[in-house]
Length: 394
Image (tube, rainbow, N blue to C red):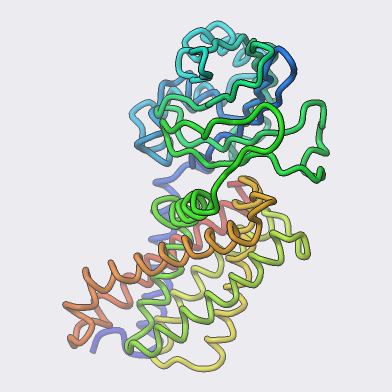
């Protein structure tokens, strides 16, 4: 008697969908507060190391611990962070300059001669014309070195969050990625230190370290950072009343997003994020709503899943391209990232099975009280994200 295919129940579900969408929107800000890894580039000269770091300096000034949260909305200092983001660039630049000595204390630049203290050479703060997006700032540091070939370790305090470290050629400018020399790239979890970085030549990095780094990056892009991808996978899970249905859907989704992830990373395909992200939100709503209207898997759904998988692959690629890939281990790091994504997705499915499926999937009330209500919630969240990303710039 519950949720039969009557006009009344369809109308009720549509009303419920819009109500939940409204509530989802009312409980969220119209801009993204996800904490992304900062990116640092080190270049060596005879007597100094130049360090350029692209980061959100508002996180540091607001004293938000980026090692324990992934979204600033979850911090008790989120209001301070938002106020800082609304300041003009000159105001924020002055605040950071005044607090730089405290920031320097959180950095670690180490050689066999001991700790090295950098000075602030320059800071560029982008004017934040759109509060829908986190503001990036670029700080340039200079640290003195002796004239020997001493290797350098670099990192920062865990409260500043994860960090990408790249060694680039001095004076290479924007063309350093086109050089034939493979220098050094690594992903540091909060509080970690880089390997000893050679000041001349190539820093020896093992393939094992590369695999571990990109496995972690891929996994973290799903859990805990990839809520949109989590909801899409949960939408696939809720539809599947049989294990074979789940395998068919997940396999197609994996094949599709692996294809576009590889093509986009290699530069064959390029689609702007402002197009991809709203479509990903729309795909979440569609998959969840289809679970409400249909009970059997068909070719049309499989084709749709494959198309949506292509979209999600472009979303994965945008993150991976921002972080960068090791040129020496390009294929290895690409595969490791994708495997990390898959492990994250499998973890989501396993948790859903342990929390819901194993107890309720064969019960008569599963569809009216679990499958359909959860699908409505997922569809509503996806619908709000679509509105947010298209009309509110989120």
